[in-house]
Every structure is written in structure tokens, then in C-alpha cells.
Image (cartoon, one colour):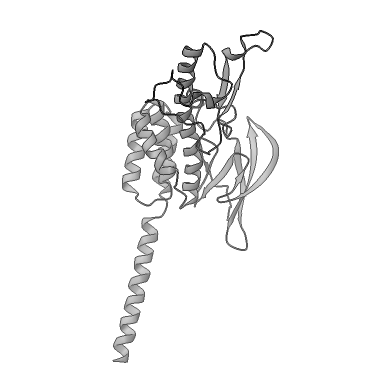
Length: 280
């Protein structure tokens, strides 16, 4: 009887270990197929239909893969480039709370920024309706609320997706009375110079990310630390900096360190980089 119990316990332990191993394998990052999508995206940024199809195929075939959020981020960009905004918004909204992984955290950062760029457009429309009625823009966006010249069906928010008020100011001519309210600027405080959807989509993908990994090492608590340098052209600029997975330095967030890849993001773009040779 005791031998049977021992055998049963061993069987259950072995089965449990096997299931855990299968689970880990099913959720392991498929870097090989992911790299193919990234290379296609970077080499052929105007092949939108092909990129979208490749991203969806990866997501379907790799359920639970940590890299799905990155792949969906690439898909979002191609959807926005082809004015498929509603489909892009559906994915972006799913990313707003996707903090279960480091890539999910990076996706959530970018989702808030892309959604802010989309949200600012109806605010601009409301400003134009206001102008038609008042022949000038308001001193404050608060004046838009309930204004009779703005259609009630036009929905807009006075805050971005970080819950910060839009950065709004009149930019008319101070020295010309009556012309101060003839021009304005509006932006999301988290996006600095990238103030609207059109200008954001005109940027070559990842062109503003200049960080390159120099080496990686594993610390005593088994976390991975990566040293980065900023390279602009063929020249290194600024101070080198260290990042562990899930941490930020300036606009750069380190989302993933895998077997062969390092993935970072800034406000609106991912960037995939080879892991430095000899890294731990």
C-alpha cells in the first residue's frame, strides 16, 4: 500500500512538472518568427496589408507569447497609416491596462500616447466650431463645454489619456489688438514636439530612438541589467545609462531581454535590437 502511494505521488509530481514545462514552452517567446515580422516592417514600411496580415498570423499562432504586444504595436501603426483607426483603437484600448508583462507595460505607455493623439482631433474640431461662432478662439478650453456652436454629438475630452489637461494657448499677435485670439497651439504634455496624429505618422518608425545596447549582465538577484549608449549617425552622444527590464531612462523603456533580442520603446515606437555578443 505504501509503495502504491509513493508511486502515485511520484506520478502526480512528474505529471505536474510536465504540465508546467509545457505551459512554459507554450508561452515562450517566438523570437525567430517575430524577427521576420520586424525585418519586414522596417525594410518595407509601406507594405501595410502584408504587415497587418503577418502580425495577425503571429498573434493567432502564438497565444500567450510575450512578444504579441510588440507585434500588435506594429499592426497598430500600419492600421493608423491606412486610416483604419477604429480597428487600431480596439487594440489600443486593450493595451491601456496590459501591465501583466514588461512588454505589456511598454504597450500601455504607447497606447496612452497614441490614444491621446487620436483624442486631440475632436478637440481641434470643437475649436473650429467655436471659432465660426465667436470669430476667435477661446482663452481656455473650458469655454468649449456646452458652447452653443458645438454640436452635442461631438464628443471630446479636456484631458489626455494620462489625465493631464491639454497644453493649450493662444499664439496670435500680442502687438495687434484683436488678433491675439486668431491662432492657437494645442498638444499633449507627454509628447512634446509630436503634437498631432499626422506628424506622428510621418516619422520614420523608431527614427527617434538612438539607444543601442553595449552589454548585459545578470545581477545577484538574477535580474538583467543592460548598458546603453546613444548613437546619432556614427557618433556616440551623451552619457551611457543602465536599465533593468521594466525600467525607464528618459523616454526609453526596456521591455524585453531574450535569448537573442533586446526590445525597447519610446513614446510611440518599438525598437528591436540584437543582444550584444557575450552577454549573460
